[in-house]
Image (cartoon, rainbow, N blue to C red):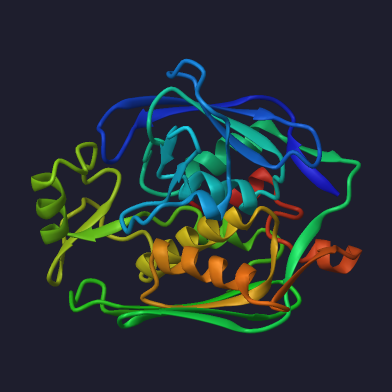
Length: 305
């Protein structure tokens, strides 16, 4: 069955790029509505569906732009939290241009959603079943989707900085594994990236408390990494949030090498434009039981940040 939240969940924090304080409210919605965003700081602003084809070119974060120009950015972490908690229908209201970065992970979003409670709805879950493999290449980065019975990920990153290096992680994201293993992994960047973004007027809200900053073989953020492979875990978190913009769960195996937001978005565009590559199906009980978020409970957060 589909799900929404039982009651309103609220969050507040600064946006990573704007440095502006933003308040977010997530509200329950009826079955078959999907995930939508609304800017409460703009008069007559359009409602924006969480949909991959509304994402413009952007490597730093995932943005959505409605037909009237209304924009919401940095949606990937809350989208990962929603799908990772098994929530199919919700309205996300915010009084600013971007979602808050919080601690740089999705853990606070997950905790708030689980505290609000999950409400099952009497409507079947539909999912996009990958039938034919598709691939996108962008320089030395690439990503693929292959047929599979559930959502699986195989992700590899490779950085010159010794503090990160080469990392690979493989995970079947069924039954709350996202919450237990990925949701507390924070965004990371190189010190040189921080300097470049700030010179461009970006990352105004970035601090060592909401991102892991590295410089060569040194981790500059206090406390270091939460996991030895936190960097690749966060990339998987981002990929889950970006894949959620398909509009329904995906039954397929995602494989990525140095793939960022735009590569994953382009992969969805290729998937849906390739004849015979994907089909919307009503999930069987067995398929639904293997989706991310099924059976997630607050205790699953006990051992994460």
